[in-house]
Image (cartoon, rainbow, N blue to C red; front, side):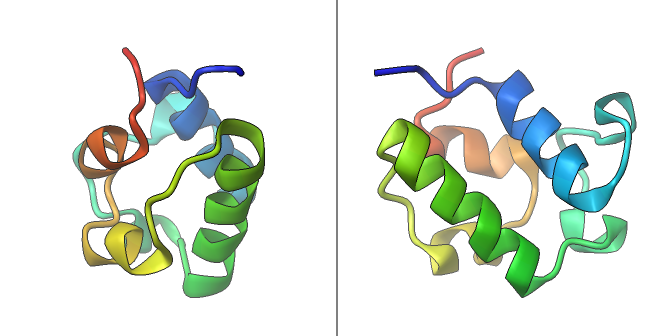
Length: 77
């Protein structure tokens, strides 16, 4: 099974937001970048299918930042 990385999280977030991955910081609240519940649900479902992650929508919504998500998603550096 493929392994989720921090870079992949950043790339996927940038993709749903229409941004350059280099413009998405690890420690910023992604809601400030335009992440809404629909986009978050889409990301969560994508990662659940591809990487069998078990973090819930609520887990991710509570702290919408890459640095908070990485351990929840079991992401590797």
